[in-house]
Length: 404
Image 1 (cartoon, rainbow, N blue to C red):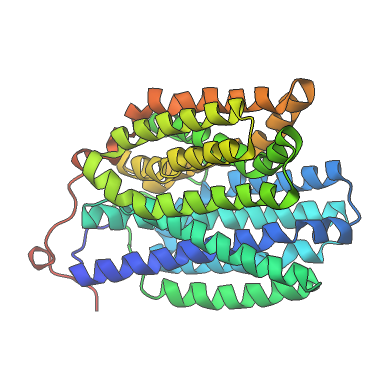
Image 2 (spheres, helix red, strand yellow):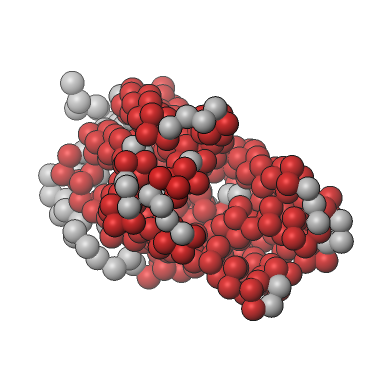
């Protein structure tokens, strides 16, 4: 992208606009998650069929994410994000309209493809704003995504409690979130490619650096997916907790993640990405050990809280490191995102398979072992350190702004 000067106030305004975009993106995910039982019943699916259909979300995202860089190069970052985010918010309505397995698979593929492309575009913009501000903001942006997911899930829970038809719920949510997303995109940076800049390839393997960074993200997302999907089951089946206590554990884990991400930028700016992730890995391992040895629900809930604290900032820092590491941020971010999406897809089923063959305790031993990788391989995130970033930001007065 061309290096033009931006006034400090303009960059700050763009930061808040991208934060709003992250919240809108998260709200779509939160809204959808609460109505999966309705979708399953509407399409008359068994548990295995539902799992098969949901897998098309990650498949669609993995296929489409490499296209995001090409779209941003052709249309500019603002127009590309506006269009991709609108596709994502509008696609929320599709799963509720599917009457059977085949149409639901198609709907989930489209839903995942639009989610992945919007994800790459907004993270690439977040990395650019972070570069211009010369301070960490990616953790806070992902914290806004978590906050949006919580709001969307709260609204979806209310709709489900009232017995609302998901087609009506999703249509209203889709319309509201589309408008909010379009408004937020008005103030994001409109990055344009330089005249001599070659367009990125339509499809390309991610660079080696993105694969290494993605490995760290894989460990964090595996722990996140396992905790979100299995924490309530662990408390109910292993510790004989009530349904309310088990559900509270999952909600508490999500809140811990959101709060830690919002507060994480200050920690990263002070201690750096590598030390922050290493410390987070230690916390995640301690949390995993508490879960494994827990004999009381309170101990397990404390373990899941530590797990959330430890992994909260890892994925934002992986995206930041990928964006800062190479000449093509969108391609690198797409590579990391593909790996993390894959981890989120396989974690719940793998945990279930291990639990069925052995026990849930052994499953969370696997999660704890992977959490050790955060401390061991945190060094690959050094490009997210401020000292490791390319020096591309200059005072606005030094570079005249050619835009009208």
